[in-house]
Image (tube, rainbow, N blue to C red):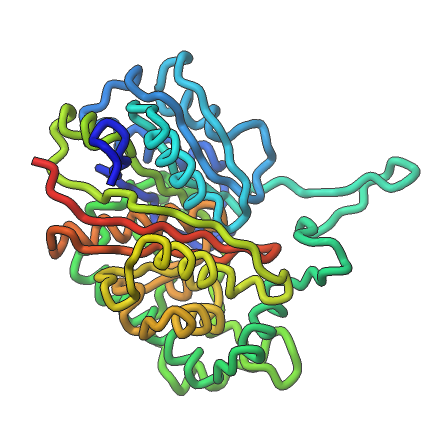
Amino acid sequence: MLPDDRQPVIIAALRTPVCRANGVLKTVRAHELLAPVLRRLLSDTNVAPDMVADVVIGNAVGGGGNVARLAALDAGLPVSVPGLTVDRQCGSGLDAIVLASRLVAAGGDGVYLAGGVESISTAPLRAHRSRDGAPEFFARAQFAPGRYGDPDMGAAAENVALEFGVSRDRQDAVALRSHQRALASAAAGFFDAEIVALPGGSGPDGAITAGSDDGPRRGLTAAVLARFPPAFAAGGTVTAGNSCFDADGAAAVVITSVKRARELGAGDGLLVRGTDTAGVAPQLLGIGAAVAAERLLERSGVTAAELGLVEFNEAFASQTIACLDQLGIAPERANLDGGALALGHAYGASGAVLITRLLAQARRSPVEGQLALALISIAGGMGTAALLEYRNLS
């Protein structure tokens, strides 16, 4: 454990609703999603805006221009506070928090705002220039050279299902449980305290306010899931029903040293015990999270059985099951309030949503010293994991 003036701790975490792309938030740009979250974080923790050392934000498909800086200024932070935007695709939000934790551990003893944001709805059209200068539009960036294979996400999910023997029945069961848990947790009010409501688009009755996640499906059953055809390969097992959907959203945390957290009057938080990012074969990109988590747990001297809370980004049920199987974690132990299969995948924000969920879960049933793991697989063949520990700071 690091000394208190260098031990990173997350003392607050908030998110927007996670809403289907091209839905209620379709006109809200990335910085407009993030700024209200940053403002609320400062208000909730009594952190003066000029105390913030940096704003570190992940983003995957935005238009560049440093959305972290733009959102910080839009949130009312002074011009003296800088901003840094991180792009590790799906892992961007978690990696932004990892980077901020390392700044604290290196002796930064400041207060950092870190997280991620994605507005898939307002993402710019992207194009290469042809030889004559004309635009050649493309749907997604290249993640790996052709000689390594650069599969689309769905094809990669099929590769993982085949390589690790993940059956269609198991995938559908994980998807159904994700929706059921998300619906139950929403009904119980578990998400209320962590969500910052947003103004959405305009409807027939005027402005729409987005105050809750709109992805979980009440009518979903095992029978309904069984009717979905393979979405990415003939005879495959990955379907629209056991895959995530694209979403808009933002999430961020306040991270600082234990020493500074106590000075701010924080009562508890999640210590960052360790982090890891690993590379794997791009064809099997979905397994990246497991490789990173294996190395992290081994280095930390922690077994999977010792983990109290686990949040995995459910981009696809196949990779969720494959990664958790490899780690020796029963899938039902993860994502207690549902995951991206039900809530949606807001790319650069999703890793920060995992941390927001873990802090909320730890506070809901506080157990001193409880260990938590956040992990996410990443396009191009990577994965990031973070090991956390709930602590009373008073």
